[in-house]
Length: 209
Ligand SMILES: [Mg+2]
Figure 1 (cartoon, protein in one colour):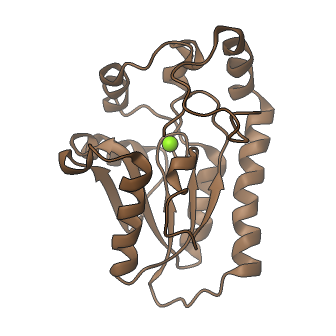
Figure 2 (cartoon, rainbow, N blue to C red):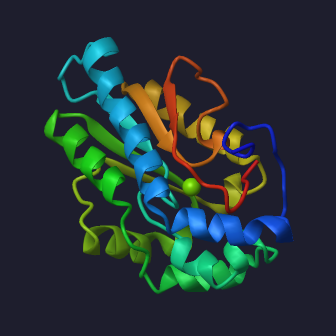
């Protein structure tokens, strides 16, 4: 709970006394209910606050890992975040392309698409994972996004928040109106342009600053 409230930040590993609890939570109905509530809020916000122009420039940004695709099967073998992250091990797992879809995110993705909103994916996955990432997304039901922005070596040195913020600024420069962002980490939406609403999905397994 304190992770979700952003009271606990910058943790490297989940403390041993919490791993059991987190494992139970991410496999529970409660995790699904919490995810569903967050995606429902996106639709409430859309219908009450957004004045879509429907000119092909209305856009919505999604993160990928633990937003569209789940890494829970990977973290299940790593004490649900209790083991220190081994990036190459995680990337090996990602390159198998076996991440399942998060069902409420998939519903939201399709709902937004049917309203004519352009969907842009901004992820910290590295550029070399592009084709496996596309295959994985398509295999579990995601298709028809307007952009897929991954990290290349030039922007690996900046913080995640800055990288994502720069990517959004570029989209706005290109004429997109970004109405909302969905991510499982605050770094997906905390940097400017701050006029964009961020929607946080639950993820107590790790923290990306
Ligand atoms: Mg993520």
